[in-house]
Length: 121
Image 1 (tube, rainbow, N blue to C red):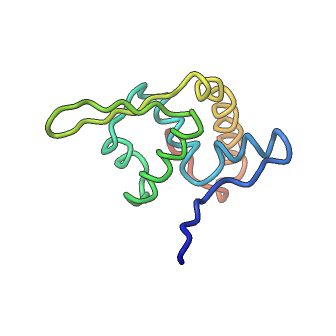
Image 2 (cartoon, helix red, strand yellow; image 1 turned 180 degrees about the horizontal axis):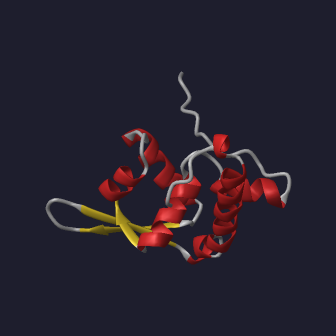
């Protein structure tokens, strides 16, 4: 008998771990930031903004953000189907912190141009 394993997050061992389980990773912070900037985005719009993300990874990340109550998913019953994403109140609380990280990175890039290229977010 084959048992289907459900992938679950490890139990957080401190508040910092809990927070980074929700916003860490390559795309989560960027998705939250773009939703903040645009208020509401459709799937295709997010895909265009997140250069290099695969369809599978975007779908998985959006599902995880929805499960973590960071993203609202609104489905319109029409043909073709329309789905919009927006931030929850929980995620909106994180925006000042994400902005602080962005400003910190801007300063590091200005100090050391080899650290990266300053790009608008």
